[in-house]
Image (tube, rainbow, N blue to C red; front, side, top):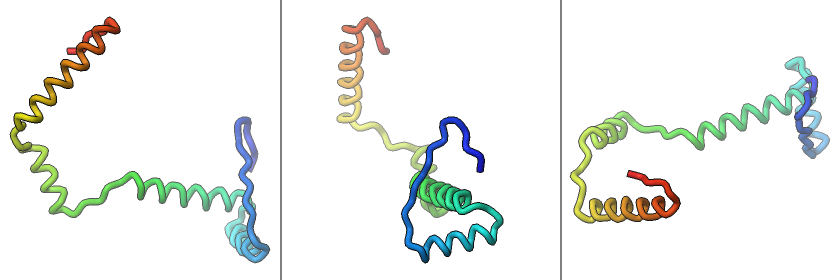
Length: 102
């Protein structure tokens, strides 16, 4: 693996047995220990990131969510009042800065 400008070196400490295991696996795939290490880390990072950023729903839950989006409950008086206060607060805060939000 050729390094390029801006690349960062990663360093990891491992037992001799673990290193030999990684080295054997790297050799069996035809790549260097460094490339094998990076490939494994990237694969794990993608899996962890995907798991942390995706929501999995059953068909029933997905249908309930879509129904709620299509048919929202009526806005309560307290929510309406809070929205008015929020709009007024933002209007007055932004008008003092010369920007009017409407």
